Length: 165
Image 1 (cartoon, rainbow, N blue to C red):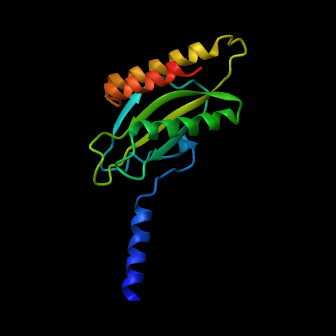
Image 2: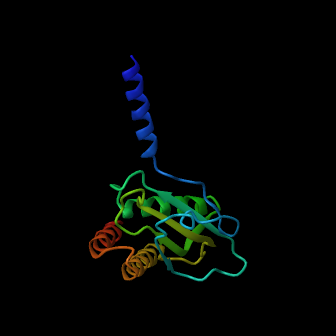
Image 3: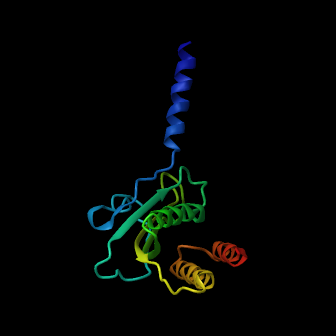
């Protein structure tokens, strides 16, 4: 019976180690980046300057193992930011992205952090889908140029954007 209990304890411990990390969205000015205390600090890409008077937020997500793709972690962070801004009837405006760099081993699991603003939705946006797709592709290109995405990830994400209605 003792060996069974030990085995269950070890299995429970291993399952907890593999859990993903998702702290709540926080104000960027009053929170610290989880990357700051990490051994592997990742690469930061500045995409836009903050709008004076707008509040910026921090969204962070870490995969539960090294077998999670960086693009799926990025999609999770994007979804978190989009939902946060949608509750305020606003759009996400990405200011900075910080992403882990391979190899994703020894605790350096895929992780992404966004610093973003929730910008006011334009009342005169008659073609939001086309401009949104262009903006998404431009953001992907910047990530490709910075090395946060490889060419294969860029092409796959670009195809997803272009194939959505």
